[in-house]
Amino acid sequence: MYLFLLPGVLFLSCSRILSNDIASRGKPEYNLYISSVVLFVGIIGNLIFIPIFELEGAACATSISYFFHLLLTVKTYNKFSNNTFFDSLFIKYSDLIDIKRLFLEQSLLFTNKA
Image (cartoon, rainbow, N blue to C red; front, side, top):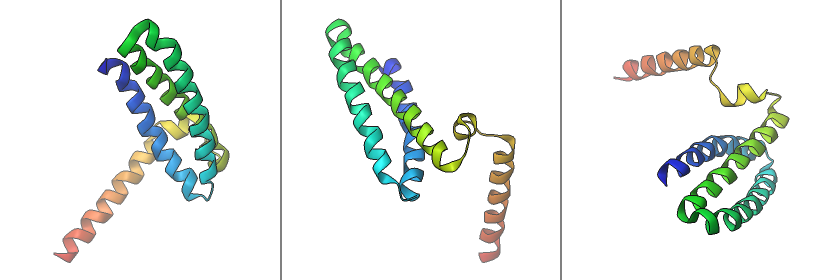
């Protein structure tokens, strides 16, 4: 059962980060719209999968609904940020350079305070 639910947890984790960005841009109502659609997908999925596959079906339906949540959130996020689908979900080399730079700046600030 956990193997069926694990991808959904990953999908939801990614979409939560982007959902917070959408809300911080002053558009929290879009998160409500997305969640409403995903609720409908989850209910339909559970009605279909639970009678056939029982507990594993519930886990699959949940993962599928979280996948739809991620797709809709990425699409909405890209609308406001002018990013591509790939840029929204995957780390680029330039992102790693920025992370390294920020880490070094923070470590220098920390050592100067001591």
